[in-house]
Length: 310
Image (cartoon, rainbow, N blue to C red; front, side, top):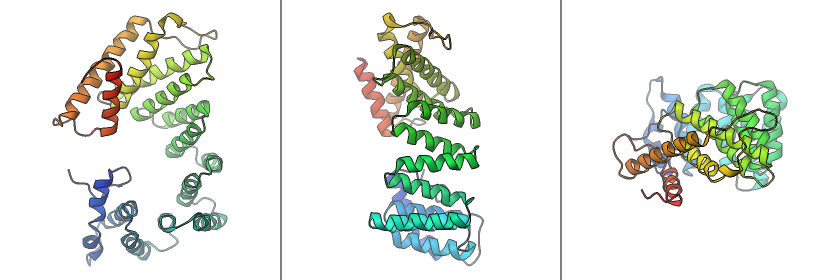
């Protein structure tokens, strides 16, 4: 299916984003009458053009949006800032954009689009600690912003602050309890925490047990979720290798690992499902074409490491 300008192109593959950007000459010709989807199309075209380096077409889209909604519209201000960031040629120009954001927020500290752009810019400039501090301040003002909690978790994760990253993801799940991708992401962070050298035996077991639970929940919510099965395979493989050292329960009694037979069955399930996904996706069978090729390759490698050829 061809990509559509009615949807945000941020997560599209580069080739599909380019297809959208190439529609700029036709879209910018416009029509005399305003349509329901026209402005979403302009915004998404702007984003696609920025991704592909067509700053000229992006600026034309920006001019159209600014003419329609005014320069003081918060969303328009954020898009104008994004365009300025893309056009910046050095760190000094990025600092100038950051000062513009600060000036806007001095006049209106509740401007969420600009606040988020400022945080994104701080992170892109390598000022991770400042970005995390700004996110904490944002969440004090807007504690139900799941996207902000998720971003904060990622910032903590990049700094190796696993317990803080886990806490932030748990806040996301309070807001979106059925988000299978977040359950899997939480399992990934817990697995990483378990594998760090600083984890003691008890805390390592706890992290592995929690990771197992999160991966299992993710595939319960989405039966074909590759990352969930991949994580489940990682955890069960590790647990089965370390059975002799496993303690069923920590001293504080906060969690219990499943018995070895249950772990074996979960391992078999993960192996079978990963094999199925890899096989059908590689053959490009109908109904199996939506998987990220890099994730499929990683699953194939994981199976190969465990002596399973697919």
